[in-house]
Amino acid sequence: MASTTAKTYHFVVVSNRLPVDRAPDGSWVRSPGGLVTALEPVMRSADGAWVGWPGQPDLEVEPFENDGIHIIPVPLSEYDIANFYEGFSNDTLWPLYHDVIAPPGFHRDWWENYVLVNQRFADAAAAVAAENAVVWVQDYQLQLVPRMLREARPDLTIGFFNHIPFPPYGIYSQLPWRVQIIEGLLGADVIGFQRVADAGNFLRAVRRLTNHATKNPAIEVATDGQPVRRVIARAFPISIDAASFEELAREPRIQERAREIREGLGNPKTIMLGVDRLDYTKGIGHRLKAFGELLAEGRVDVEDVTLVQVANPSRERVAAYMQLRDEIELTVGRINGDFGTMSHQAVSYHHHGYPRDEMVALYLAADVLLVTALRDGMNLVAKEYVASRFDDDGVLVLSEFTGASDELKRALLINPHDIDGMKDAMVQAIEMAPKERATRMRALRRRVLENDVARWSGNFLQTLEQARQGRYDRIAPMHLPDELEWTVDRRWSN
Image (cartoon, rainbow, N blue to C red; front, side, top):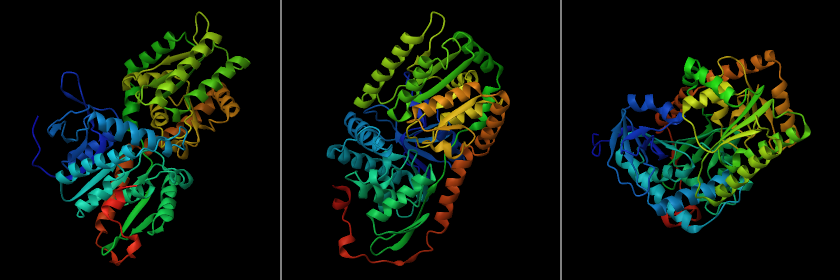
């Protein structure tokens, strides 16, 4: 483990979590996830660094190198985790940005800690970024970092990508610190969103809350005495490493495991699959309600159709998530009690995650994937399922409230709030003829394989490079009226 404390880097990624997890024996293992896969080649070629939290409270770790990536840990205390992470990030911003499906909490002490932790991440990134470096900040936990970096290091080219939705102004305006967040994001040169609608929502918020001129996708950010700086805000839909999922699905051991899964479930005619974090945005309860009603109405038979629900544990110390788990498990128990037989469960429920190999086997075993999210930035599970189905079989039932629905038009698109419509789509998926299944899946696969995660990161970084090259082609300095000048104290306080 080589120390890298004195070194600076020309490409720096900043995210809440590092791309590695600490194993029980103290070693570091690479985290699963598309972001790491997408950025790994760039990190290697640019000799880049990754700034983030190592995943455990009060863990002080010196910078080190892991598998060719320079790791810069940022420590968080138990207080930070409770207030910055579980509090403001996941009990204020997360529900607010997901259409207030659950009520957000607005607490000043959470906000104050969010500001302090964002400053800590910004300071760490500024310390390791070389002169004129590119810094790419990731996601809603760090929305103040771009502005903080801009003030500390005006030489940097800064990108920001928001992995979750950005809400309509009528919802966003509820946030007491709405202006501070907008100005924090506008520190970036390029701000990326999952959907065109999200970028539009952000631009409308800029127009309502600031005096910056906007002309989609550009925002002209005026700071007193400085040249007007042009910020680009537009959609860059994220994707997956599609080829790796197909490659895994083609392995004989994975196909054999898929057969074992079907046998273990009693070889039903149809396996429907749901794979989600246990989160109130995912519509798991709506899905179970629809399936329970289909069983009650006799439109599907428990001997023929099984629903497998994988619910990865999530934010288990947040009250809303504890309540959701109780509700889901009660519903599963009720459906199985009412409709299960000695040989067939109606719902096979699993409250834990699985490694990628097992997930790909599940995708191959499942005849239908149900993605019923009430609001989702993208939903990569839908793309993983499609990438895994090299056999051109399987049916994707997909919520229109996911970013994936913008691209995967040949799925059966549903409104998850319309339970009757969801039931009809589930029956349509079960009864769909093999020829139609193949036609739809081939179209979905073309889309996913062409627009993979490498293309996503390449498009974003290309736009960021164009912004860098055009940085000094600026409009003359603009002097603002006194009432629009911000002090640091006003900017970060309520």
